Length: 293
Image (cartoon, rainbow, N blue to C red):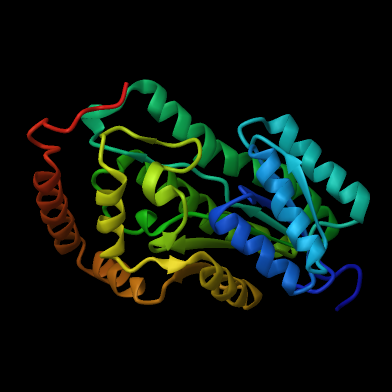
C-alpha cells in the first residue's frame, strides 16, 4: 500500500508499541496486526509480551516481543535501530507504556514522583528521541503518544498521573506542528476510562497509596462505564488513519473536555466536589484508610 517512501496505513507497515503486553498496548497490537501491520511488542513483562506475540502469529499476523524498559534510553534506541535494520522502515511509534499512582499528594514520597516521571514522561521522550530522527530521515512516520483525559481536566486523587499526561499532551501538540514539514505525523490518545489493569492497581508497576479493596475500586470505575480495550483500539486506529491530532475515546468524554475548556472554573468546582464526596465515602480525608508502606 503506497511506495516504500510512504507511510503505510496500516497494511505492510511496521509499528513499535511500548507497553504492548497488556491493556491498551496489547489491544492496539492485536488490532494493528489484523490490519496487516507488523508489530513489535516492547515491554518489561517479557513472558507476557511473548505470549501475546505468539497468539498474533498463530492467528496469521506478524509480531515479535522485545523485552524493553522505556526508562532506559539506550535500550529504546537499540529497539528502534534493530527494528529499522531488520525491516528497512518504521511507520508507527506508539509511546504507550504508562503507570498510575493513586492517592492524595500528602501520601506521596519523592520516589513516587520520580517513578511516574521516569515511565510516563521520560519513557515517552525516549520513544520520541529514538524514533523521530529515523522518521525524519525516511520522510514519513507517525508517532502516537498515549496521554489520558487526565490531561484535559482536573484529576484530584491522581495528581502525579495527571501531571505526566499534561506533559505528554503538550509534547505531542508541539511536535505535531514541528514535525509536519518533515513528513512525520504526531497524534495523542486521550482515553477516557478503558478496561485495563491500570484501573485496579495502577498497572503492573504502579502504586495505590491507599488501601482500597479491589471490589471498591472496581465499583468506582464501573460508574464511569469503562470501554473494552479492543473496541478502544479499533476506534483509535480509525482516528489515527485520519491523522487526527487529539483523539478522545469514548466520544462522550468530549463533553467533559469541552466543559473544562470553556468553563474551567466550573470544571474545577465539579472535580473538587466529586473528589471530596468520594474521599469521604472511602475514609481518605479522615485518615481511616491505611497507607501502603
